[in-house]
Amino acid sequence: MKHIVILISGTGSNMAAIVRAAERERWGVRLGARVAAVISNRPGAKGLDFAREQGIATGVVDHKAFDSRETFDAALQAEIDRHQPALVVLAGFMRILTPGFVAHYAGRLVNIHPSLLPAFPGLHTHQRAIDEGCKLAGATVHQVTAELDHGHILAQAAVPVLPGDTADALAARVLTQEHIIYPRAVAGLLQTM
Ligand code: GAR
Image 1: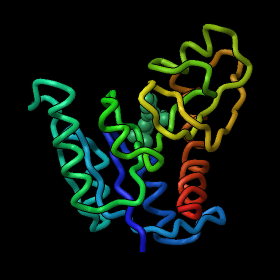
Image 2 (image 1 turned 90 degrees about the horizontal axis):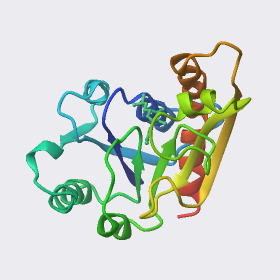
Image 3 (image 1 turned 180 degrees about the vertical axis):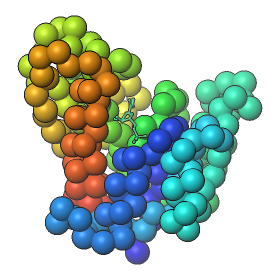
């Protein structure tokens, strides 16, 4: 059985969707892998509680304990590689990764970003989509490359931007779709490995 490691920084609802897909078929998804560990850069990340409740190994590599991105990424890499993952899944992991780290996991590092890339890389994607008058917003699953929020697109979902939408309302609408496309995209990628 292949292993995956999921990196989170906060709530971890995408991580939970993938964990659930690993447990049973959901939306026709069979993940074909075991979630070997959930690792956070924030000790208080809510998603760690969910992972512990599921009996999944958890780890914390607190970025505040490191004085450079390189030393943080080296410690994170060591923590990940203990679990020998086929795939490393970023699920609301809010750290910019160094080119060396990305190269180490070339082809087996994926991310979900809350916009229809290549539109709106970076932060505050929902407010920016509303401000631009976009009629559609969404989320993108993509391979991670050294360039932030670039890399081969594996899956996308679009939702309407409704009149009077707030960033929070739009984020919630997009997140519902993220929970569907991310397990599917991870399962699809694992099948090719
Ligand atoms: C999700 O919307 C995800 O797309 C986004 O953070 C949220 C995490 O929610 N990721 C990024 O913005 C990455 N740059 P979750 O912790 O409930 O999965």
